[in-house]
Each structure stands twice: as C-alpha cells, then as structure tokens.
Amino acid sequence: MPQNGIRMDGIEALAGGLSANPALAHLDLQDNTFSQQGERAFAAVLEKWPALHTLNFSDCVLSDEGEVPTIITALAKGSSPALKRLLIQNNNLEAETLKVLADNIGSGLKSVTRIEFQANDVDEEDEEMLALMENMTARGGKFLFDDEDEEEEPDVNETEPESIPVAAEVAKVLTPGQAKTPADADADALADMLGKVSLDK
Image 1 (cartoon, one colour):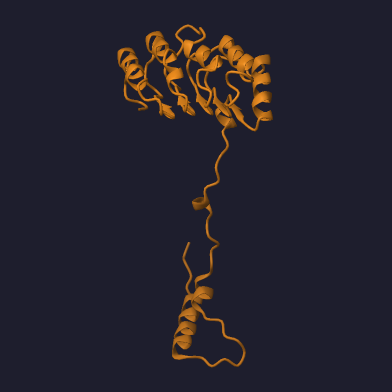
Image 2 (image 1 turned 45 degrees about the horizontal axis):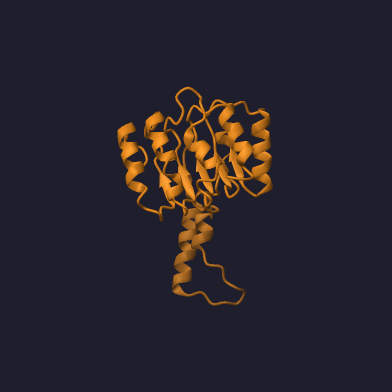
C-alpha cells in the first residue's frame, strides 16, 4: 500500500489488523506517515509474521528527531528471523540507528541480504557504515547508501539493431550460376533505383 496518504491512526489500525495474518511475507508501506505512533504499533507486532522476508518502510517518517525507531530495535533483536530485504530510505535515521544495525547484523539480522539506507543523515565514512558494508558484502548481500550504488539492470530492449542498407536488404544475393527468377529481376531493378536516390541537405 505505498503512497496512499495513510497517517498515524491509519498506520496503527493496519498494524493491528495485519497482525492477524501470520503468513504475511511482503509488506510495503512506502511513503506513508508513521511517526512515533505508527512505528511503535508496527514494532509491537513484527514477531507475528515469522515468514516476513521483505519490509519496505522507506519515506515513512520512522524517526522525527533522529532517534532510533523501535521498529529497528525490534528487528535487531530478531523479531523477524526470515527477513531478507529491509528498505528504510529517507527516514531521518542517524548514526545511532546505523550502530544498532551494525551491532546486530550477525545476530538478529543474520538473514538479511539487502538493506537500502539511502537519503538518511549518516556520513559515508562512518566506521559503523564501513563495517556494515563489509559484513553484508561478505555474506553476498548489499548495503545501499547512495542511489548510485544501485546496479543498473541491462535492458535488452535498448539494444539498437544494426542498420542494414536498404539496397543490400532488397537485393537478393545469388550464387554463381544460379538462374534469376522474375522476382530476382524485380529486386535488382529496385536495388538499382534505391542506389540512385540522394537526399538534399
């Protein structure tokens, strides 16, 4: 339910309702407004979803003044053992939150293979940042701090086909001694005509 203008009361209600679904595996509430009320409500029910593998709480105002959100603390303690992807971009998160992640990446967050942390207030040279990146890389995962870190997937549709001269496309190549058919003669005539065409600049 990304970008639905859901505010604190609605987020709290969603947390309570979704807690009744133990099979929940993918939760995306990006770009809604949690604030303290909403994020605490979700922190309290994270353990209700043992199968949760993807959590997208980017742009959700998880932290108003840079404090460590209770959601992060709960995850660090192992509330979601199956979690693989944690998306928490642009949430006013600071060094203390980064330290909690780094300190628990090998315990409560040991299954996580991707953390998206872009647009938070942390120095890229922070020791905790470097340690977290190294740990994630060692397990074959990724910690994304900058939008430029995101790998660009090759787009097969962007490959332009090689241009083929029209005359060569139209003319039919004949092997030596091969008899020309009427269609071949027409193709040769068209190729000759196209060869004489010029465009004025």
